[in-house]
Amino acid sequence: MPSMHLTQRAVGKLVAPHPDGKQTIYWDDELRGFGVQCSGKTNQRLYIAQRDVNGKSRRVTLGTVTGLTLEEARRRAEDVLDDLRRGLDPKKKEKSYTLMEALTEYLGPKEKKNEHPSLRPASVALYWQAERLLKPWLDRQLREITFEMVDRKHKELASEIGESTANLAMRILRIVWNYAADRSTLPDCPVAKLRKRWYPEPRRTRCVSFEQLPTFYQSVRRLDNPAVRDYILLMLFTGMRRREAASLRWSNVDMAQKLIRLPREVTKAKRAMELPMSTAIFDMLVARRQMVNGSPFVFPGSGEKTGHVTSADRAFEEIEKATGIKVSAHDMRRTFASVAADTDGVSWIALKVMMNHTTKGDVTAGYVQISNDQLRHAVQRVADRIAGLCGVASVADQKVAKLR
Image (cartoon, rainbow, N blue to C red; front, top):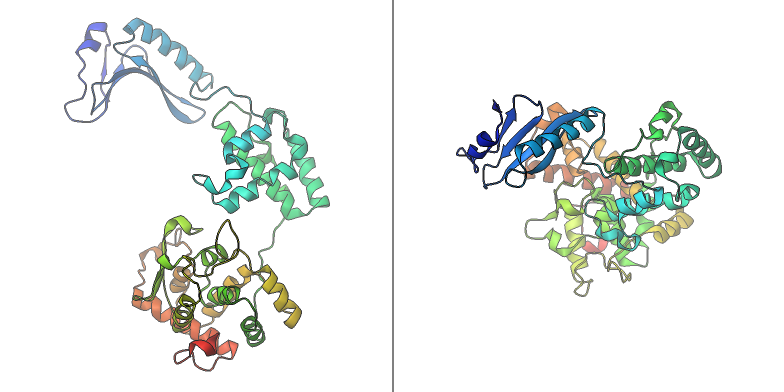
């Protein structure tokens, strides 16, 4: 950026929009950090001040060239640059947040959890648990919450409710604190000082074992609710996440190409997914199309709010009573991954794609491109293996009625 001696006359000669079409800043050679910003697209010329504050570069607009004299702008710049030097960020609102105010502003109205611009409804509902877990602090100013309070509450929650819940409460507090810190001046978040005091949370490993699959599969087939039954089978044979499977629309099902296409807006990974159908799933969806009575959802439900199946908890309880096998919807995903990893001819990269897991951070995986034919072959091999373990004789020639 050019530097020059700014005078009232020199400023008056600066041109906007700049001839090269790019935004240009002319810095004053007397007062460091003070300058005139000329737009590359409009006739706007602005006095600005810029300096690093708290490790971040901050640019502050002082006013327009036509609205301020050079001396008025220079005086404002001196004040702003002095504040920045002392660590005071003028772009931050000097608002004093209570925990409840910060929580409500971050999450939005509680009754509109499905309308948050960036968070999934499930995440919004999870974060609202802070209202219960941190109830004594809701009316406290955030700046009044100390590390000693955080450490004590973390231990209390672990003792009274559970260690995972204690960790969750502190994670929510940290998220909300950081949100408020971006909009006001706050001390460092006290949760950061927990460091090694977080409670260990072992990764869940529960799934339907290979030996249990025949019994489990037959129990699923005997369920009275066909939508829930087929919903569970879809998760078992595809590894789809429970919410993505439950809310699956016919508009996302391409029967001609035998593909399930999920837009990024509905996936947990915020990444579009295109999953080939195995023979078993294609046959099941053909049968389901005749059963939905015009519903836009593959698995219609009685819930007025969603119109689709939202939970299979009762079905899993029924299966547990009948077989002693205790699993959940997410365990279907883990079961699928376990079988896929043990299936010949299915690469680790193909498994990642089927699970819609990112290859970010895996340099080698980033170079590998899986074609639709390769992925379809892998999907069919895994479905055949699952069917074999379930005791279904031949998926390739399987009749719809037999699979179901």
